[in-house]
Amino acid sequence: MKRKEFLKKAIPAGVMLPAMINGYSVKAFGADSPLVQALMQGITQTDHVLVIIQLAGGNDGLNTVIPVSSYSDYFNARTNIAIPQNRILTLGSSGAGLHPSMTGMHNIYNNGMLKVIQAVGYPQPNFSHFRATDIWMSASNSNQEVFSGWAGRYLNYEYPNFPTGYPNAASPHPLAIQIGSTTTLTTQGPQVNMAMSITNPNSFYNLLTGTTDPVPNTPAGKELKYIRIVNQQTQKYSSVIVNAATSVTQQAPYPTNNSLADQLKIVARLIKGGLHTRVYMVSFGGFDNHSVQVNAADTTTGTHATLLQRVSDAVKAFQDDLQFLQVQDRVIGMTYSEFGRRIKSNSSTGTDHGAAAPMFLFGSKIDNGVLGNNPTIPTNVTVNDNVPMQYDFRSVYSTILEKWFCLDKTVVDGLYPPNINAQLQSLPLFKNGISCNAVTPPPPTDDRIIYNSPNPFSNSTRITFKTEGGHTLIQIIDTLGRVIVNLLEKDYAVPLTDSVMFNSEGLPTGIYYARLQNGVIQKVRPMLKVRE
View 1 (spheres, rainbow, N blue to C red):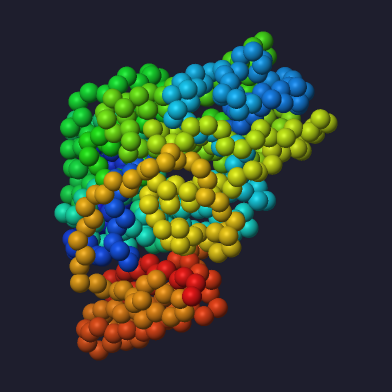
View 2 (view 1 turned 90 degrees about the vertical axis):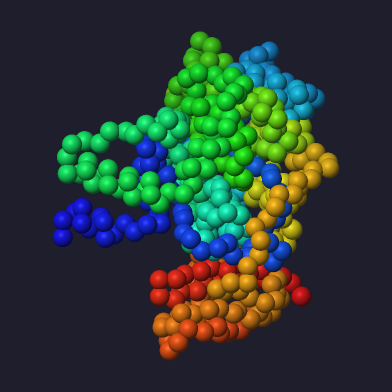
């Protein structure tokens, strides 16, 4: 079979493809059936948005949020990279301060819209970039492998059975958007990724102008052109993104030569343009500073200072733009890095992989201030000493889900792998009086292919499903992505509706998924087990 013929047969309409649409690389999903009823009470009614900023590479937290109150210990631990005390941007009476290049975020703090969370991490930290990133994205323990992301599980709870039936009249917008070539584990649901990706800012503007990147005049180039045509025909989210973006004709200024600012400018434009997308992810790298982190002649300058300035300037411009566009009360932002750096600097004017580090939350609804104490720095610090964790990063996630996205605490606990929720705290991250600001949820439908009752349940629940006949499989999956049991495997002679009991005795409370497989059909139903 010729390759082009293979592609024609292998790429049906509605397929998921990380390929190009007018120079715009996306992963997005579409089909034609109606929206199914969301778990229990339907989609949580909120118009709130979370913007996640990944600082890739492991940011040096001690030179980002500097312990002014214990400055001598800090200076002795890293004499060759320490920031001079008189250059630090103090954070009120907290005893902490920001790197002098972070004037933008310091301004946000002074305007009452920045929360600094000290020493965020998790027990038994992992110092591999790849594994540590997976832990932060999946919200797992370091000894667990979890194949779904914390935001993906949240979105799957809100939009069960995605991607089947999406987009549709009631829910026409992407659930999550990432500026980057591929969607990450953060938005991975139990079955599929809940997000779509924009390759980069340039390709975003290619989409708006209809510009198509040229293909080479080769057989492979012609096949690439064909794939793009298929994607143009099947990609249903591109038009709503174009409509949202083109409805915004003016924005506040952003810094130039700043890739993070370029990404955040797109996010602000799409939010103002009316997308109901709840989660946006952007990434900014270069923080793996093992050497020459600073300029020896002036430690306030150098690679790390440049990175922090770009982050700070981009976040400040984004916050100003949200206010200019009058959507600031709907949006919060969060920064994270896969780990911090060691307390003691190395001999190459750099820092090595470490443990806990500060996180930033920003927005008009964020409770301003510094949460936690300055890290304790031993007098006789060694190269192996790390900043100890004060706050578990999953406590930050769970507080956002409960207080910002308005989920019931029981539901939030169920979104985490077993043995984690008992460790989590509800943190003071938000100002008082936050409203969920209702948006119209999609209407329920009685055309449910798989559902369970009661839901939530304590010991057992009846799972009702429709089969088109033939081989039918019902599986129970946990939040680690493991199949707990094949509850039913049967061949049906004719189409019908049937049911089977699921007895959960011996299983911990939390979210489970009932998965139906019947021919080419597969559906996933979230179920919530609670205590009696």
